[in-house]
Image 1 (cartoon, rainbow, N blue to C red):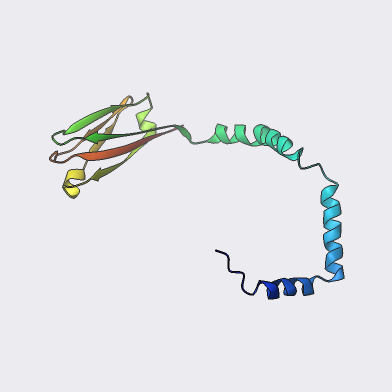
Image 2: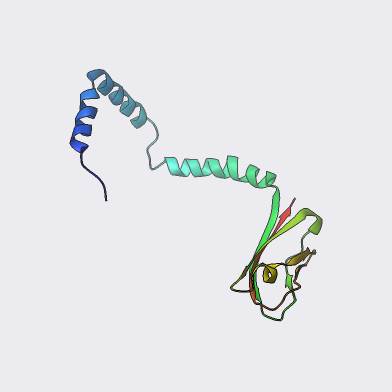
Length: 141
């Protein structure tokens, strides 16, 4: 909820500071702005400039070639899992992963991850507990 206590005093302070000179500045500002293109024309011209001057150069210099993501659950008793991905240059890619276990402590959450050109292999020593895995592969140009 808005606290309006003291608002009257603040409005009075602002009005007291509005001198005739400052009011003249505001009037000139309005005249300058209204002499430009109408507000309805501006978004279309801006969108055209962005399409022409911004999007193409940014996508051309982006260091990221592709991003792939996924999640899965490694059930109790499952020691490894292979996750297929679209073909990448594994020498130009990184894989990130997070692991969550509802029980079992840190030992049940340790994974070894191997990234290949068409898949990721997740392997663990302790498969006594079920874990949820989220992964992301970022391939660079």
